[in-house]
Image (cartoon, rainbow, N blue to C red; front, side, top):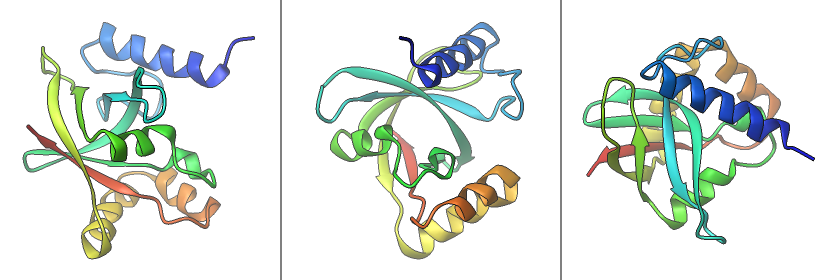
Length: 140
């Protein structure tokens, strides 16, 4: 039996790659990066499309998981293996980054950028009792 979430992710990944980072499925546009991460338990490489906000020398990403009660697997993978790569619209090569989880006021200020950018993030926050983690991907 196929996993509908994995199939949906693959469709987004395929659109991203076919159109130089443009994903026509609303509401994405050019707002995603493809996060190449390593499974904390399996060691297998995985790819996740994630909403990214450019910030200085890197990107902010939020582990929202659509407001689910638990964090996405990629969040745990980044904590275990923070040196990863991303595919970025307009860049021909993979970009090497290091993930840093933001805490306190830095996290709150970054989270405000997500909620200002999309009603979806405001809805996710209402659906869950957890504090949605925000990470900064620094270029390496």
